[in-house]
Length: 414
Image (cartoon, rainbow, N blue to C red):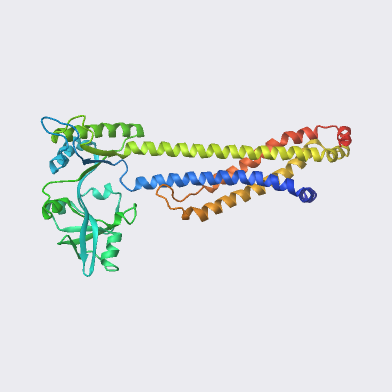
């Protein structure tokens, strides 16, 4: 029940001991503040890492050609390996039952594009029908390259949002002509990419059209695959390593490359890379929690020390109260009431200050690996309550010891 006299005592005690109250508040508020900031930073790193994996399909495995570094079967080192349609077809044929997404592409790193009076240099890529999933992009207008476009080598293009803005402004681009390296293409779709504007300055065209229109024969640049989902990460990692080794052996055999020549074919297994990123993220979060918990413990110790001071200062008062008939429980509650009040207010001040700082400073931090630092309010609130409870428990023991002092001994205290 609400006791006006007890609250009056609390505020009078606070007024008489401003420095003590301030130090107690700073100890508690700083502990909560540091913990919440650390949790926010950890969440920002986690979001940044997750954003990197949104740039491409989950579990993407890519292969590209390089230069041989070893002599093999009479062929000198230094040969430039060029992937061809047959490499892609052989890989798909051998591993088709394991594949979820499969695509080959040929990249033109810079090409001249124009529409009306607008002209610029942009990247364009010849692709298969699955390439939209490889890039983890999505169509916002029209459609993507389809099977009919590939079979008939249609002159159609799917452009990114940024390229649309540059070339077509506010015009609807669907059905319009886009000139790419002096060849007309009909725009059939517009895509957006989670990786941002750099990826959205591209144009995608059928790979068969690319090979025929630009005289590159049956050359391709990259092979991109994802495997069928597994029940556990360990199974997915094992299958991805097995698949990577199998494709490497197949491509080396087809292109007359020494089995131990690691420079001729490059690859990236994002399933394997994901393990490293997630382990790093786990270690970072554990470290932040450890530092934060140590800070909270320091705050609890501070509260306990302040409680000892309070008990020492009020020993004679406690003796008088007991002489007048106050019970030990009422003595303990009286002492803890003030401490819990100060701890609670200080904890919420530290919580609100940390959340405000994250809200203001977070959006100003520009980094590929740090994004939207935030803390679940329920977790932060639970931390404050935990600190209040821990502080009360830490302060209970000196308060209980004071309540056990005999009145005559307390009255003699100097």
